[in-house]
Length: 116
Length: 111
Image (cartoon, rainbow over all chains, first blue to last red; front, side):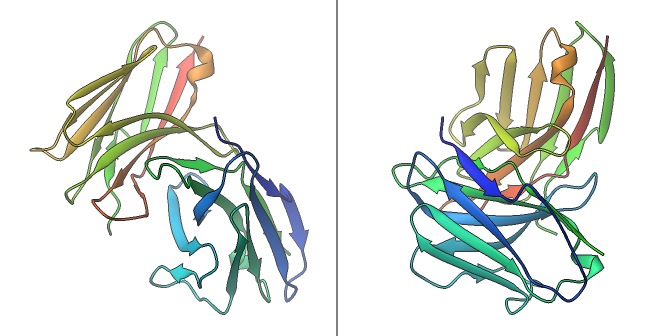
């Protein structure tokens, strides 16, 4: 199977600081990477779609200046939560489409962000 | 909301019994996928069924798709304690990159 890693797995930060989360496809090239947010006992909500080398497409209601996404290579995408506030505390999950087949997304293990 | 609906929201059964979860969606699709999520973890892909397929099997999993009713079901046979998790359906529309997830079913298998 295809493996996606995320780093860090958990992060606690103070309100007002910025946090960067990395998403890497370890054994495949991901043409497209996706960032999701998940609140406790709820489903995944897509935040943005990121294609390598181009600007991310954000879902309605997601502030692009607050959630900065960079997809510099076919194996790495980053999400930066800028000026984090307690309401940004959530579980952030990334996924990637294989370049050779876009049917299935492969998900990372998620990052638990807690903003104090 | 574009999210699909899943029912039941929660299901608790005894080990060895079968578990059935249902998913309904709103738009025409290219394929429908089922994922499992253990608490606090990422998603694991279980099975994909295309819009021109009606049934698919993988081990103890059986998925059906009824495009006329815009619904799918996931059956887990001979459940085990390790099957305890949340299960999500997700649909991909023709030509779309993104998946639209259902609300999920929390499955608990009691030993």
